[in-house]
Length: 389
Ligand code: ATP
Ligand code: MG
Image (cartoon, rainbow, N blue to C red; front, side, top):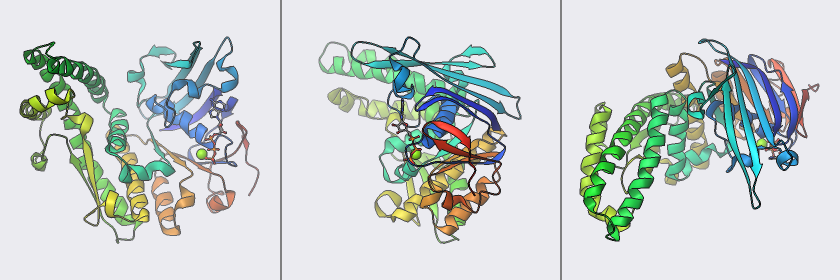
């Protein structure tokens, strides 16, 4: 799929911009702090309904209008898909209280209001950033997020299970505290155990399946980017004890049963702790480079190549699952790659219908400039044709 028309209104530092994107390679060139990452963030938001970096939706609304009478930021995209074209619109509506700014999102697809969960993944996208190295080197939360953002784009049931899980987890945790304080009976936990294990089973089943594919695609990319020097091994590490059961594909009902059994074993510890200690909210993914744990033993360059391989694997996974190409977004990542990895990445993403690459240094993209279908200059929140060469 590809976006052929994009409009940003009062989004971040953009007042009003129209971006006539093309099929194939699009280059957005601009000095630091001009709006390149904001542009890709807008596309990522249209795809996932979540910001790639903001902690609050109010951050997304252009500051100058946040306290105006109409503090609304609007993104629209015309998307060509093999499943039919799409007119996608996200409005971020701000409101100010005395102490803070808040905002909420509204979504329309082909003019019809939708819930955010229905809109996720209608436009599929993979975003590469220089922070991706943290998928490999950072805390488990970032690996779970990597999985969640990828799987929710192709599996609506997954997204629903995630929402249900989060809600039940909160209720179960407060009940655990009440049981600890003897304000409730441990018998009351049974219902919530069932509910949690049910949603948890769906999540773990989907994660195990997705990681099975990612492991294959990721290894392929790693070998290719390193000229056969490096191997990548990713395995699911569910927070249910040993993962020996992963050697055979298992159904989510079996995951649910397994989770219930582990919850039984840990119940007294959980009551003592007053929180749920097992389940997908504590999952991790084990990542090894050349058979050594990547977070603690791989070199910085190996970690970066592993992260890059995981993103390329994500794009492949989406293409495979959707039967349509995701839009590939590269935020400033080409400049940190050596010549071989850069070439490997560019060759691979060239097989996708649309790629949008940002850079602060036009010299770094001189070789690919002639092949780009669209070239933009990003300057102070405005987008214009790039006239350089
Ligand atoms: P770099 O090359 O350093 O990565 P960039 O071009 O990617 O720069 P962006 O991250 O897109 O820059 O940010 C551009 C500017 O947008 C920043 O100076 C930031 O202060 C501004 N900005 C961010 N949010 C808002 C907002 N809500 N309202 C107005 N301006 C904002
Ligand atoms: Mg940037």
